[in-house]
Length: 334
Image (cartoon, rainbow, N blue to C red; front, top):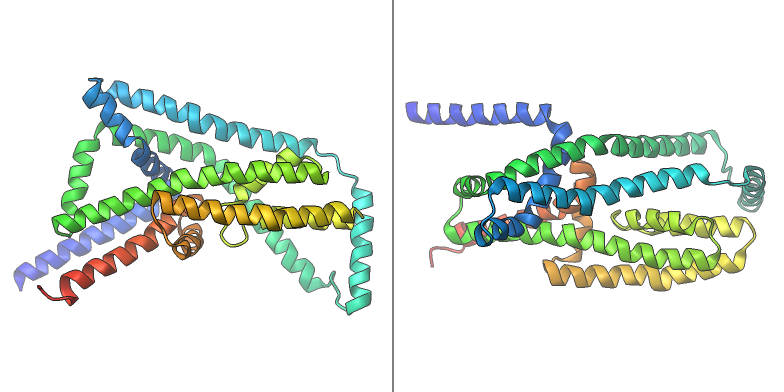
């Protein structure tokens, strides 16, 4: 009883201390998740540079950090700067747009009797707009902090990778076969999401730019970039961008362009998204589409932006652990 008391008390103390640490440093979680994602991607490169080419750990880690800056951080910051600049330069005829919207609202009210501009609808729309603006501002403002934390943690993860991996490997409460299965699942899922999602976003963005340009959408390059980012949103995806654009073209009286853009997006953009996503999932990690969809929804709620990677990983790990438990304790010793 005394040994059980001390062991349970020790575990409770560890859990309580860990909860305090996690809750206090949760604002840096995105940086940690980003560092872990990059570590999975560059780990093999780090091993080749140090073991085959004989580089020192510090030198190899610094070179990889520079590579991360050139290939990831610089393009991201350039894209954000470009988006902000293009948004500031947009010149829209507000009076004509307001008149068109008012005419559309009056038609809806006349035909259906539904009051679009009721107090409840305005309050609901204002709430959604406010939350959306706050989310965008928080993500942009936290980008610098996340980048600094990510690079800082990645450097020390690369320097101490052997000790870190061995320590984590020994802590896993499984036999050798199941440890390899868990580590392999983590590697495949992170690699699949980290490579597949940006590649899919670029392809979708290029296809969307072609359609927007052909339909005469203002600033097609800007909306193409926004469409690329929208691919990470589950279920709705690119529809968050092209559906309002189709409505905009229809409201301005350009019905031919609106119809053409809608047909282009439904036939080409949406189907290309499904086909490419399916191919990438099968090629990189053989992930079921439902795991990806519900994993991204769950991941957004828990991790924010990095949930697109770690949400599907969390669900995959859950099913893997259930399968391990079934084989170890329910199927019998045979």
